[in-house]
Amino acid sequence: MAGQTFDEIVDVHYEALYRFALSLARSEADACDLVQQTFFRWATKGDQLRDISKVKSWLFTTLHREFLGRRRHEDKFPKVEISLVEENELTAVSAPPEQQLDGATVMAALQCLEEAYRAPLALFYLEDHSYREISEILEVPIGTVMSRLSRGKALLRAAVLQKAVR
Amino acid sequence: MNRNEAKLILDVSRPGDEAEADPQLAEALALAQADPELGAWLAQERAWDAAVRRELQTVPVPPNLSAQIRPQPKIVPLPMEEKAASWFSLRSPLVWAMAAAVVLFLGLAVNWTRSHSGMQVASFARDMIAASPVDAHHVDMLNADFSKVKGWLADRQAPADIDLPPAIKNAPGLMGCRIMSWHGQPVSMLCFMMPGARHVDLFVTSAAQFADAPAPGQPMFASINQNAMASWRVGNQLYVLAGQVPEEFLKHCLAPATTARVRDGVLLADIF
Image 1 (tube, rainbow over the protein chains, first blue to last red):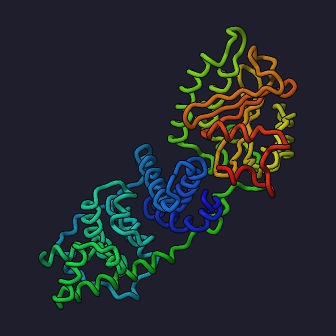
Image 2: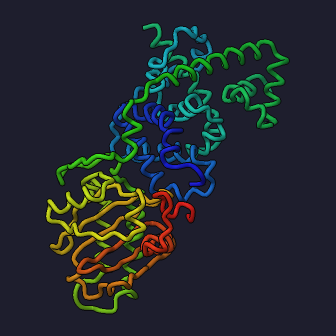
């Protein structure tokens, strides 16, 4: 694979993929399963990827598709809706002090969001993907990604603040 | 561009995105520089983003995940009824691929088999390819040690007198095995992840039941697009090697020891 072995690709990407999977699946076991399945796909189908520089996007896209496929069949993740927060309330929320943040709180807040916001936010924050890259990975229009990111960030901030004050 | 439009663009941008020469982002950034309130908002947003990004990177990853992704080097015997290693928990895309292979083999069977009596190799190949991924598990045992795999098969009365072509035998690609059945005859399936991440399965069973088994030393190949299979015979054993790989790859896999391109244990990696 143009200089990168399977093991090297695993080493570079598995942690980021796991955190992305955890944000989507909201369970460690399911996240691990998604990551393993993604790398199995890579092992069996990766040779079809012509542009080796797209490995990262390929892996994230594959993991997201895998998640969507499982969700369709199992529908086992109850959604916690917090989208009823009004836009005005969101703009009035000030950023919590940075010292109030910790990884577990942020991940828990992220997992509370609807999947439509969760996936782009996870890609935005976890792997520092641009909204154009997120659009390609999630296979949704750029405009949709932008609006979901913007709205999702506001929802995430509200959720983090809510959890931080508990 | 008004302030709200600029906010939307700036909100989803990252430090460094300026380098992408996005004219809309450039305009929004210029507006933020000229508008103190917008500039302060942007600084606050980016500080928040940086903090969230930093904290999410601290979420721990299970320490054994990396090892789980890779095939395990030790024997993990599992009951046939249970789901095998999750690494091999195949789901729909591969099943679709194998289903495509089944369709191809249906077509191949017409031209490939000349005899209309007895069991046919193409039917065998078709059934094995279809059956191996459709089940909940792909292999019964994960192990990269060929001698242990053979021992495991022998203990279960499956074909274990397996004579691998040198090119396959010398490549570090064995993943594990599975015992299958075809018309009452046991079949040993060996899974290989060959260099270049090429997944091929080898099915071994008694050749006696086939009217059209290849003659010894005369392997047969069939391929359409990216699906390929090879069948050959050694003694009384029929071998079928199949996978979504180029036919040329299978030919190299079957090359005799004197011409197989094995270098430092790496097979064909320099070819494909």
